Image (cartoon, rainbow, N blue to C red; front, side, top):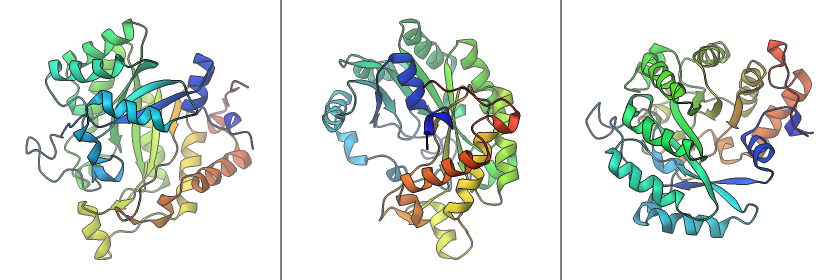
Length: 308
């Protein structure tokens, strides 16, 4: 199975453009979120417990110390992207953001930044700051957590913004030639294949350079955990997730880069589904569907000739 012939992955995209493997190093910038600190609400989105994907202990370390520790763990790459992942990594004064970002960019062998945030937390001043780094020749990705394009779903999961906030952020970012990666969750309550495909099509129409797919997983400390324990929330099987993800990929234009096609969480934080502990088996299921039905873009009649 030649994966690079099935999906336009971020790893292959970077390898093609840089001629070597580039590894993302995840950072915790001690940011919070307007949907947790009371600005928009408290408790955050119903699916959220940031500990499911970020090591809270690392926030005690400086950005330089975190990067040094991460680089020591990585032996497969010599150059890196600094990934500000936890919570809302643009939710601070611009001077503070500049200090954080530049501390990361000053580390040797760093080629750029990936900054994860909410669509309603990217004022022009932040976009101008990120654009200034891109103008210096650095790789800059603005990662926007949309999750769904459906108004009812965004309200149901207590997201705190609507689709128009995402569309506005994308328009302003693309006006500055910033690359956008859009995060989408597959398996949200009352959403199936049709709803996920509609979200994808709307995101593509609005304009995005990359996509991250995440299966909905129920984590300890989230509002959804209570619903799951009470039997009011069902999660997708691995087979169901793989089928929906593969269908979305087949309907994605070939030039859009898939930064991720699944995601994992660890026990005891992870409650359900248990298959979210394992990444590779899920990815293989997705790739088998693509091998059988057609690669990225094939449902649009435009499969991509991926770099060999």
